[in-house]
Length: 156
Image 1 (cartoon, helix red, strand yellow):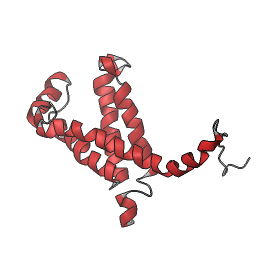
Image 2 (cartoon, helix red, strand yellow; image 1 turned 90 degrees about the vertical axis):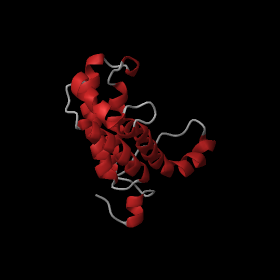
Image 3 (cartoon, rainbow, N blue to C red; image 1 turned 45 degrees about the vertical axis):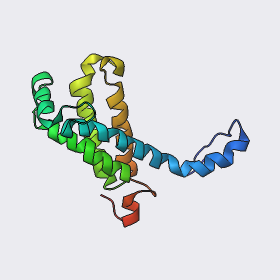
Image 4 (cartoon, rainbow, N blue to C red; image 1 turned 135 degrees about the horizontal axis):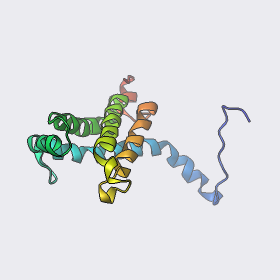
């Protein structure tokens, strides 16, 4: 088999093949939009105190006192999550937004959550690592056909 050919297994229910083919182009945009929009409320918590958050100052104090991180990272993390999440969802500067989110989530995974074990329900690294991996895929793939990057014909 040639390396340029991809293997696709026959579907268990062949009648669904047209549905799969019709929806397949929208799976990457759906993941990109979800990943971006799931970041936005976390940024809003850090930046504005929305959704039960504490705002930049209190989050910065928490970063410094509880996590041993510079307080200024609260602003950086909030901006990446809020503005970067919106950019990722829109597919604008997709690779840059995804790279920033990937980096932030890797730091969160190893600096904050690793010591709590795997499971997110115990404060572990499962959730931030999963989102980091998802963001990393968009660093590689870019925004795709259904993105503002594609609409303007440029990407970073």
